[in-house]
Image (cartoon, rainbow, N blue to C red; front, side):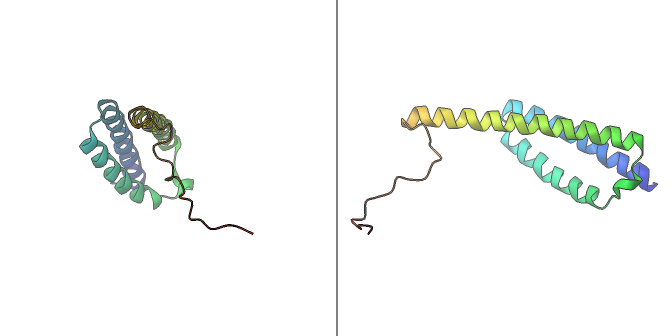
Length: 111
C-alpha cells in the first residue's frame, strides 16, 4: 500500500471511529467510549508520522471531516459533563459539586 493510500485509510478509520464515538456518547456506553478513546490515540500516533505537505485534496477533505466530527463529539462530551454536574449539584444541594472543599478556619490570623 502506498503512503497516500495508507494515510487515507487511517483518516477514514478515524472518521468511522468518531461516528462510533458519537453513538456511544449518545447511548452513554462507557465501555465503548473508552474503547473509542484508546483507538483514537492509536490512530493519532499513526497520523503524527504523516508529513502534512504530502496530503492531497482527498486526504485534506477527509481530514476536514474528521476535525469537524471531533469538534461535534467534544461539544457533546461537554454537554454531558455539564448535565452530570447539574444533576449532582441538585442531589447534593451544591451548585458546584466539583469545586474545592470549603476552607476550614485554622485560627491563624494574618498580619
